[in-house]
Image 1 (cartoon, rainbow, N blue to C red):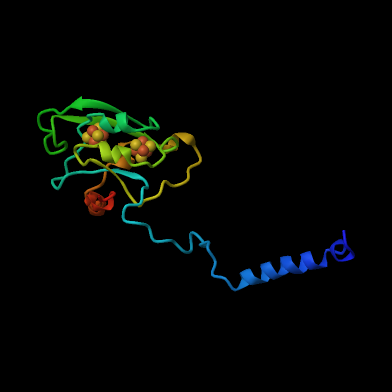
Image 2 (image 1 turned 90 degrees about the vertical axis):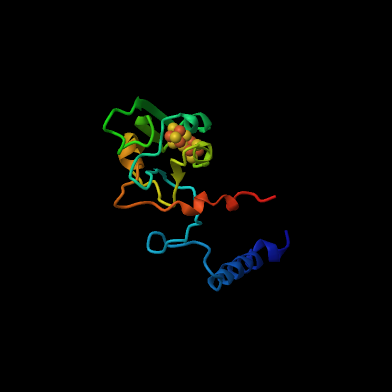
Length: 165
Ligand code: SF4
Ligand code: SF4
């Protein structure tokens, strides 16, 4: 080791030069939650179970989303629609219970791809932090959209965003 190397001065000065150069660079981080980044229209966040224009649940409990889910995050119980429930459910079969375990979900979007009824979509909404694990099991009360506060998924229904050949 030379004397110059022994006193570490060049190395210290080199380190400080790098540190000071970062003062003048644009930060790459965002001060969340004060500032929020814009999400892509096809961002894969929290799911929604859609209703049709008449307010009826679209899901027919066919189970294809659960079958497609690589994380085995979706479970449901199917039921037969009764007379007089035509205004609630679009088809003869519906999901009496429908659950997504958000701790298992990897937000891959396979459930959305698999659904033949355009009933489930991922959205730009976030899964919020909870204190208890059981709170991350989202049931129909958290998944089915409300007619007073409909969730726009029109961008997701444009298949153009998938790889074009
Ligand atoms: S986004 Fe993927 S992991 Fe999450 S529920 Fe759907 S298929 Fe399963
Ligand atoms: S969300 Fe779609 S794929 Fe899943 S059970 Fe309902 S209709 Fe079937």
